[in-house]
Image (tube, rainbow, N blue to C red):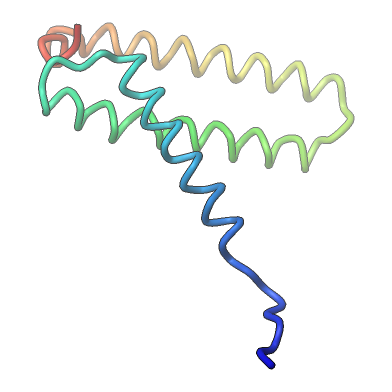
Length: 101
């Protein structure tokens, strides 16, 4: 009789594989790359940014769980980060705009 393992890593691996697949789909559909370089740029930037945002959101909720004020601060920080990323993308558009549709 085989012993029953106490820690089964497969459900977590399946979840991570599914998340990686969906992040790849989001990166490709949101940027619509024209070439392999555009595809590489999209896959190197979009999924890590999403993972950083999700982990920051998880940490923030764990640290400041029920505070309405900190939820407002979190919203302000997310909006300012979104605007900063949008401004950086606009500034980089002449350099990398040819790779995206």
